[in-house]
Image 1 (tube, rainbow, N blue to C red):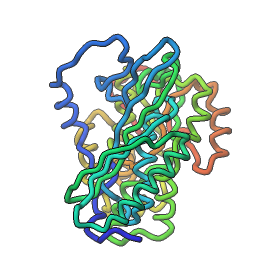
Image 2 (tube, rainbow, N blue to C red; image 1 turned 120 degrees about the vertical axis):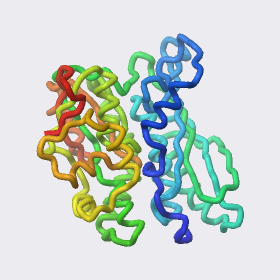
Image 3 (cartoon, rainbow, N blue to C red; image 1 turned 90 degrees about the vertical axis):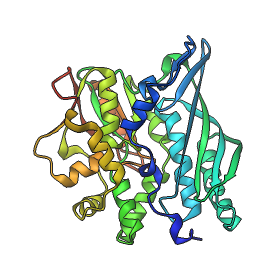
Length: 341
């Protein structure tokens, strides 16, 4: 079963608003002090965290987007995995989820059934309960989840707090947006699409089950702002600089060829423009720069861990289906926040 051809264009996290616009808007919103709100939007973290008791905090997140793949069942899986990821990025466990749906009034309702089936299967795989949702008519399909998770207040992983000397590790390869763009114009190979779908439908649950056992200082998931955008938020919030090694950056091999052919997204260009001269490239080819700016849909976790644990944690992560990679290190604050060399 496939969507009508006009339903799958620029979707996934590539269709999200750019970080510069959001930053300006959020700075104007009124705020209310609450000592139990441990994590809010002021640090651009992956989800909010509210302390309920001394031993229990609630994680809340919401994420949805338009299709980036023309199979409604797989789209449902990807959108659900992407929404659930925000809870994992905080170190938490998803408990409940609610569907968020925009669906054309005149479209065959069976498409919606396949979307919801894919999403429900990922919620169940996460060990969470699908508890309801809301559906409205719209000209274009959009789907996602509102997810509630739990965590101990002392064990929250935030997107800042990286310490000098930490090792930086990424749990999924990059290039999802570039491959999806090539796919949307019929230029992606079957092998590239297979890798893309495996990457996007794999829950970050499995890597987080390992990561949370170690002294992780900062963690985020890599989505719409691209690898460099999320790395910049983590480094800036930590008041440190990240040295990223170009030879260690993991990417799906086909993304290199497609980037060279300029199958790139407008979201990636927004990410590049937003970061500007706050990122410095030392002899980094254009195609790799594009992969680093590329918006990821249901991307991996980027985390900062004490270097003495990096070998042990990498040994355990290497046993998972999708391989993790050491990508760099944390240093004291330098002139540039992100240096790729």
